[in-house]
Picture 1 (cartoon, rainbow, N blue to C red):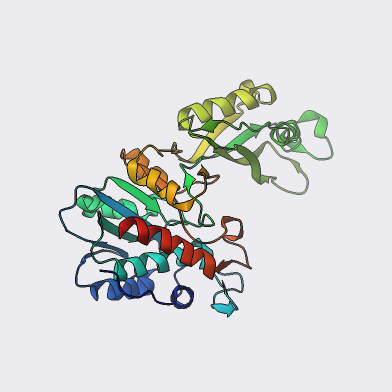
Picture 2 (cartoon, helix red, strand yellow):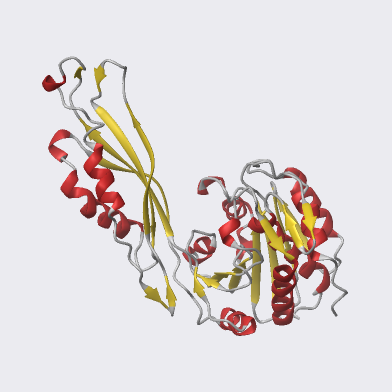
Length: 357
């Protein structure tokens, strides 16, 4: 039996007003736990600042709805502000709107057609090793035993399938230190970054189509480090690159492709090297799964590729079909003017409650 739906915009605003920058999710986890423990049909487990709630009705399938509690640091937008049918504020799109939908589904869909596991976890916006999903996997792996998963990340109420992988590398180039009054006796490592930057800027993106979804790779320089003193020719410089790669490649293949791209402007003989600083795997679309196929059909729109990394990859690594579907425009995530509309919240709630009810 479903209970009346509350004001999702107001609930999302309440969540926005609870500060939860990464590593500081405790207060929001307390609120979520309190809300979930008030629902008699749910078993609730707390693992650090991660809260998991489950139905146990003996259904033939179990699906997960997952969302992260944390936000990036504020940019003058740490308080909720409602104007008409739009909520403004830090995390409104990414992803407290999605959390509001999850809480409301947990409260109202008390006898779902499939057993449901609701996963509210910490530290998604920082390095993967901090993710609350890994804490759950270590402490209570049985809570992650599901047949399919939906990440309620902002997608504009469209299903976004799979996700792109992440590769962050540093290109270290070497030169020879010298006095700036006599640079001809040395070799300026910073100058040697020029051809590298030109090659990165000329990168031709791949756009592979997988399961009807077009992915779009990117390569961007995101940091430059070099220099010793105002009168010294530097003997080392470092260019940091962010590469988002499509799910037809794994991390090793993406690294090899990057090495091949940059090899013509690197000199191994001088000690130039590519150093992998961080990586995260991509996830292919898994839309053949019955629940995910039904989700796409219920939206009335074809799925599209997720042009970012999400924890869909966490589930995919474990053989669990997963997709992204939530309220909010992903293009405003992390922006000072981040917002979510009432229509998005209601649309996502309507689709998921219809599938689960």
